[in-house]
Amino acid sequence: MGLSWQQGPLSAGAAGHFLTPGPLPGRLLFAERLRRRMRVRFNDTWIADSEDVVLLHEPGRYPVAYFPREDIDEKVLAGNGRTTRHQDLGETAWFAVRAGGRSAERAAWEFTALPGHAADLRGRVAFAWRAMDGFYEEDERILGHAADPYHRIDIRSTSRTLEVRLGDDLIARSERPLVLFESGFAPRWYVPRADIDESRLRPVDGRTFCPYKGLCDYFDIDDAPRAAWSYRNPYREVDRIGDMVSFEPDKAEVRLDGTRLRLEPGQNVVPHGIDRGLDVEEVAPH
Image (cartoon, rainbow, N blue to C red; front, side, top):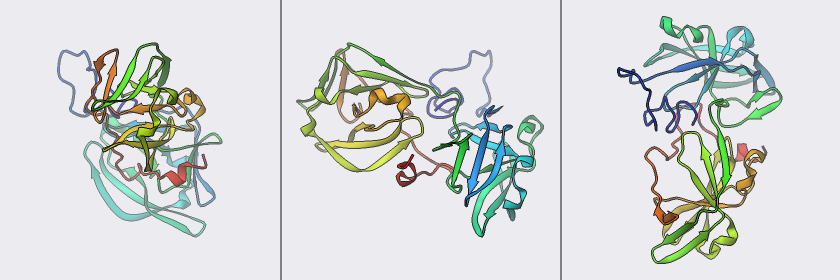
C-alpha cells in the first residue's frame, strides 16, 4: 500500500521503476513529517500527543509513526535492557509501556545509534500498534496502521462486460461492474448481486480487515476456497462497493470483455511484524 507496501515504488515488487542512470540501493527508506496531530492511548491514559510525528516508510511494511520524546509521557516508558539490531538503522532499544497498574512488554522502541543520514528519527519512539488501546488523529481512532498519505482509492463505473465462470458454469455476468483502483494493487472488479448466481456462493468463517475499506466477508464457490469476497458495510468513503462481490482471478475464470484476468504477483496481503496484528473483534465497533 502506498509507498512501501504491495507494489508501491519502495517495495521489493514495485510495479514501476525509477528513471535513473544507475541502480538504486536494494532497500530505500523514506521518512517525512506526518503533518497531522496524532495521539496514543493506553489503559485509559493519553501517553503521547504530538503534531510533530515522523512517518517511516520501510520496504514491505506499513508506515510506522515515530513520536518525539518530549511529546510522550516519559513515566510510561520502562527500559527492559533488550536490544536488537535493525538492518538499516542500527541498534534498537525496547521498552515496556506502563500506565495505571497495567504493563505491556516490548511495546515501544527507539533507534539509539542511527547513521547520520537517518537523523530525522533521532530521539523518537514508536509504539507497537496492537499493544496500545488505540491511535488517534485528533479525536478519531485510526485502525490497522498509521494513515499512509500516499494511499488512494478511486472507484469508477463501467459498461464493460465482466463474466465469472467455474468450469462450464456461469457464476456471474454483468455489464455494470464497478472497478476499484487502489494504490499498490491491480484493479479489482465488483459485481452487483443481482448479476450473480448467489446460490453458488457459500459464506465461510473468517473475516479480514482493510484500514481503508472495512471488514471483508468471504465465499467459497464449490471447491474453490475464498474465491469471492464482499464488503457488506464498507466505510462511507468507499460505500459504492457496499454488498457487491469481487472474484479472485486465480480461483475462478474472470473475463473482462472476453480477456481473462490474472492475479498479478505480489497481490496477496501477508500481515507481519509486531505492530501489524489486528483482529475482527477490535474492528467491529468502529
